Image 1 (cartoon, rainbow, N blue to C red):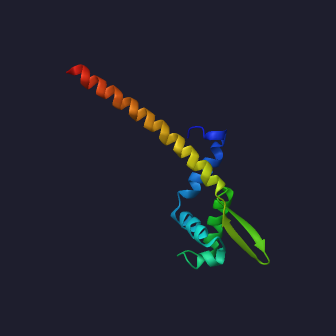
Image 2 (cartoon, rainbow, N blue to C red):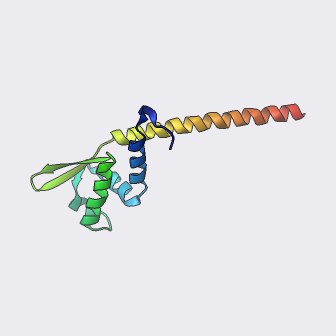
Length: 117
């Protein structure tokens, strides 16, 4: 991967790895819709066990995408958007770079076409 803005390449890498799994993306969607939830509540909405949800939440937590807070005997998870924001900025920078490259290719091709006439 190329350098991320602010030099936080490892953070962007861990976010992309975490988002590669459809179950983890679904967990993020559920948490974004609900605000916060326990692993048990989330497992009720997915075709996986509570233990699997806990493991997926650990990956999301390590990537900085969710955080868990203990409330009594429960751990309630919520989305942390900062890691997603940093990844989105990196992706926007990458897209802008490709847009510039493609615009240069287009200019070269159009110039070659004009010159060949």
